[in-house]
Length: 85
Ligand code: SF4
Image (cartoon, rainbow, N blue to C red; front, side, top):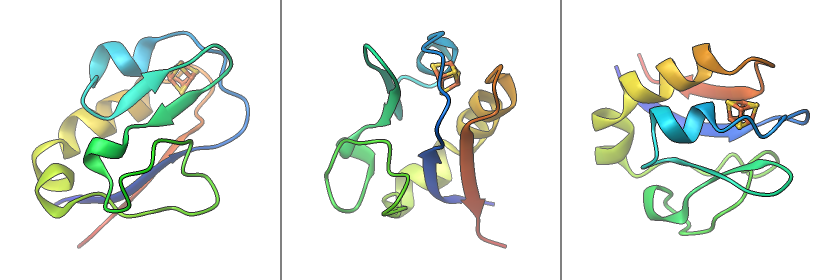
């Protein structure tokens, strides 16, 4: 199972939990959290909310467990992701 895309919905409270769990993917800023360009196919760093740009295949595979753990650990449940089957 791989994560194909991950994004941040509105409402991040900048608690840093996701970056602690999976710093390869999540970077907490002053007012939100972003998905790092290093792991995205488009190379852009943003919340990825509208574009839902896919993760690079290797990253989505290797980091799937950590991304899911980060989503489960988000206190306001704004980390969303899609899985392949
Ligand atoms: S865990 Fe959730 S609330 Fe905390 S910084 Fe990450 S996205 Fe924001």
